Image (cartoon, rainbow, N blue to C red; front, side):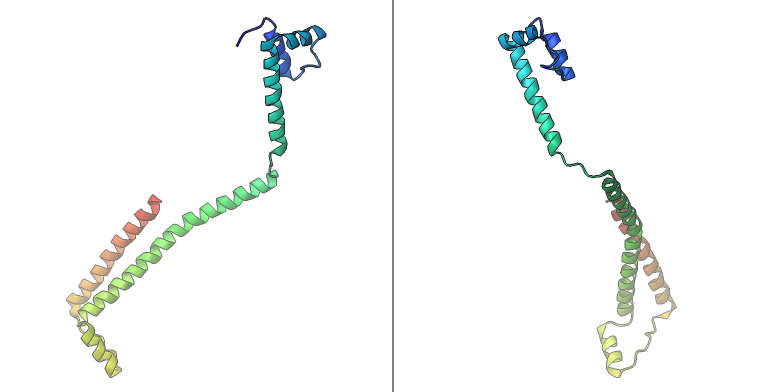
Length: 158
């Protein structure tokens, strides 16, 4: 773009927003005759007009509404952080119950023993012995610990 000697003066008036009111007749006449200065004024006025129209169209929410939404978001995030360990504990309890029932089913003699107990209408505690009971308890504790750790690590990663 060709630079003109009056560019600095015109730029200052445009920057301050005083064009054309504060410009003298001689400077306005110069802008009409100088291609570089007239383009500069036209582009600046067009950009300023677009800015003013976008500022009018911009929808700003009231500060109280913005604050209220931020408080809701903060509470929701806190609740999610609090619920994570509770969910993990529920999954661990469910896993322990499932494994315990599976081990009890296996140690009691399988489906045949359960059918005979249900058919007779009598539920008899199977005799698995002290070693079997210790194995059952140790297995459930170990499994609960592993599942709890796995669920905790999976939840914390997210």
